[in-house]
Amino acid sequence: MGCSEKALLGGGCFWCIEAVYNRVNGVCSAISGYAGGARPNPNYEQVCSGATGHAEVVEITYDPDHISYEQILEIFWEVHNPTTLNAQGADRGTQYRSVIFYMNEDQKKKALESIEEAQKGWSEQIVTELSPAPVFYPAEAYHQNYYSEHPTQGYCYAVIAPKIEKFMKKFGDKVKK
Image: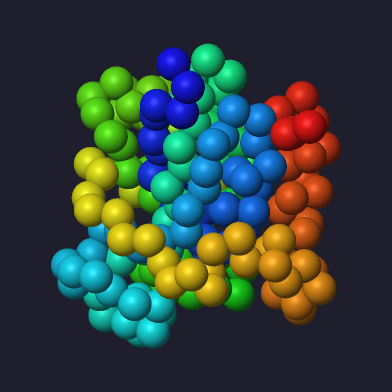
């Protein structure tokens, strides 16, 4: 099949989610961007203001012969906190919300099952939004592969690196060689 499937996920800062999925075997690309708001072609400053309604998201293109949508979601639940409304760590606002944008009814069904299963691991209620996939707007070039380009930057070192480490410990068999 090749790289024929897409997932669209938001779990706080897109740099974090992109950095993890770029390390997943079977993921062909992870592109940071914006989705879920009313303003067409938003830019970073507009999204950060919270006025556009967009979330920072990552469009993941993957090969279903190597990784399933369910496995993509299993990783998602481990690398962010789905119980904090409109926030991840110190990042606050609707642009940092936990969200699964589904591409079709099959993804919706699998996402609902995944939420139910993931809830067993959390004492607080999961508040992840589940919505049909809207238009995806890629973020500016300087946001793409941010962690790989700036691994010693403070946010990368303090926030992203621990998420990658957690992913690698839990999903070592899913890490790109």
